Image (cartoon, rainbow, N blue to C red; front, side, top):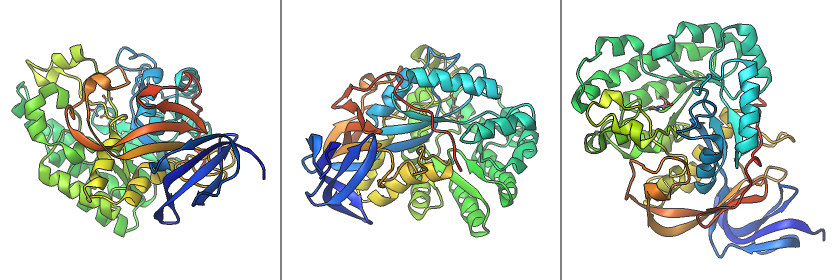
Length: 438
Ligand code: NCD
């Protein structure tokens, strides 16, 4: 029998719809065998996973790695180290860096920057360009979607011009008209909460759904019960709509914003625990397609400005490294099935944004011929999330001190180990650009 490069054996793997003891074999960065039981091809290197869980690597479809132009907050090296440590093997980066990624030239420059720095594979979303011609070029070069479009600052006329191109449009849904009505001159947390009402999101989603009759609209980070009701109805009417939820909107609430102030300040804002439960139900039943982190780093100095006046703090919390343990904890507690987690964090993000390897095999699955993007999880390990242990530039998290069950212990990108037991062992610049291919 042929000898392959690497064999990961004695693991628990998802296999034909159930979790079985087995392993995988890898040659040239690709999966060449996925087997139940101990029978695997001979390999140069064998790793005994001692019953640990072996899953497809997570695909985080919404991160802000701030590169270029805002690299004191994060850059592609630091952000992708955090990703590797969180079991994330492909990230889709957002274009609100400086300059914004809204032309072919800037997109190509960003591919180059990320290509020199990233530890994990990456796809890139593109900001809406000035012209349709430029939009077509961005599509052809493999932009994952147009977005995240901030209709509250960019207006929505722009979206309408790009609907017929056929590329997904990802939208941060807060209706500028509603925000204008609730605009505040105050500065306290309560005033902030009043100024960012749930009605803004609900109204924006109602306006977006008719657009999804013909074009694919992806709604970023949904936060309210009414939002998922609307999307559920839209999907029943065969609208081409997909959406995502973040772990912070699932698991945190206004109580955290009141307690942590700027450190839990994010847009759309945190909501009520009842919203969190409805979001989780919608994630379970598939109304919410995927989990993304909306990893949005800012420095402590920037956040501190919000202590006196929350409106002065930049919104956003980090999450690329903590998503998987937080979601695995829900699995452990019986609130989400492991298979739904795999779909929402691995398989579906790849499908929605057309991420495949060069042979056309989708990312985010355990499939022969697919990239060996994998995460090993110690599923019983209880531990506490701590900001100072994170691998990105931000050393604080709104989940500080939270007990989680399930720890990523090894991450492989195309068969190369990039993270092991708390340490980054991969190479800067190893990560590859994954153009959208469908
Ligand atoms: C994001 C950021 O900082 O780029 N902030 C946030 O609060 N979520 C932007 C965004 O996704 O809305």
